[in-house]
Image (cartoon, rainbow, N blue to C red; front, side, top):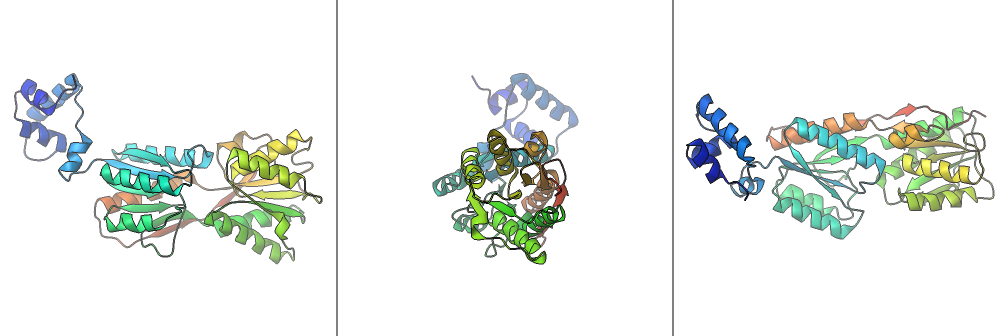
Length: 332
């Protein structure tokens, strides 16, 4: 049978109130009593209830994190980075993968409210942005990670996507590529920014990007494979491709090699994110890095300040991406 606070108090020879004070680190209690209560809790394997803490209006030391797809390597690495930051600060995570479904977004936000989480991180572009306003209205500390919305006043930590796209375009041009294509991620403002920056680089080089050279897909294995086949069947295949995520870029490399093409001999590819996929791809994928650890740390710092009710202005932290050069782009 699961031990209760009553069992701890009885075995330690103290009152229930004293056990509660030890758990919550409140009141004036002798070191001897604190040590005794902690020893009994360990002996009985007693775990204080976060639900009980929530009912009394106390901290639950839990944080909710919404991501679009935990199977995507970028968000898997993001989740791990958040977990590391949370553990270091004494918190645990509720990780929610929305799969870009509006119904799931609503279900998870309601669940996090019921769990009385101390803060929420949203790392997905919500289909219903009213949910963010709902969180703000409930006075739950919130930080947006890698997403932003002009109508929402909250802390934001993101990457300069336009700059990232510009770096990718400039790099391909410097390598002598003039026939280029971009594979963008559907329904993502981040990809729109990367496309904008990519076009700017081409315009400066007196090059243009035709509509047929913009191929959209979701950043999943299945859809990026479909889009890769579409690209490789173009009558005038480009010499280089900018994939707006590493997953899309690696899927393209795999599909090209299946068709007997050499990377980068027959086709050059540059990605975006610098996930583990880019490092283990064959050949290694040149990519635009999102410094996940740095971004996650900054996000958690903003959330901790909000949860501690520290008065500070809403901040928008924009991190500049950098090129990570490997072996997937050929110099013409």
